[in-house]
Length: 364
Ligand code: ATP
Image (cartoon, rainbow, N blue to C red):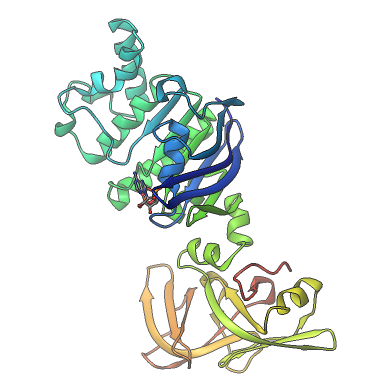
């Protein structure tokens, strides 16, 4: 296993910066997810680690060596692709053993090792079949087996679970989590699914428009999102973000918006710095931190019921505020709330997130 590092890496296609001056490092044995919306530069970053793209500027290091201009085969990496990229004319045994074949290993070694890995991945009974004769989940595991059959310094995954149905996806995610803990592999995993990133990663790099906007542990990203973009991207459903007007004096900050009641906050230097740019801030509260409350109570958001989706153990209750914006709560309720009923949602102060006019987190 080995570390991976980007030093001021930029990748330009024509005049378009797919990746802009990105620097970060992945420790030996870390499982890092590159998370972000379509087109933010995740796959391009992964392909630069693999050597399938060359940076326009900057350096890529693996295990401390500058591999920026190394051929993919000289990098000791394994990659699992979204479409599995299995060879259709080869049976599973030959597909899995392929990396050993290109490295000149004997037939006996190839088949022995392929069987070992296939057994671990519970596809050992399918080795004689062609890829077209197995299910999507089994194809995914075959592609994983091929990546694991030969020891690599770094394992790269490009949305490997996205072609699976919801149930198989959960199962495969659990399996990958187990594998990571078992092997302690250094892995870089591209996904736009925040739940997948939260479940698998030791650290998540949230990307937006070719840049990393936050690089931290899943719990840090959940608890202290650095920007409104991250807050809105991580969490299911995402954090509610409401613009509020700020008035301050006497060491107190009053935040107000129609349909919102809030206790005054103590002014901090961070808040005064944030207010330098204007008087509108963004208040953030996660859906799971809201509960039904009494109208008029402090720290509440009120509106009319827009939707009440029963999810089994809990409901997603969405209210529409007087300005037309919506706020969603994830709550346990048997109450019958009818469409357009007045609903008040309360939250405790420790669960409030504040962002400045540019969307950057204001430290508590
Ligand atoms: P997705 O989740 O949709 O795969 P992504 O975050 O992985 O997205 P990339 O595939 O890295 O995004 O692409 C980043 C940007 O670079 C996109 O706007 C894409 O259109 C552009 N891009 C990627 N490869 C090329 C290429 N070979 N030529 C031109 N533009 C490209």
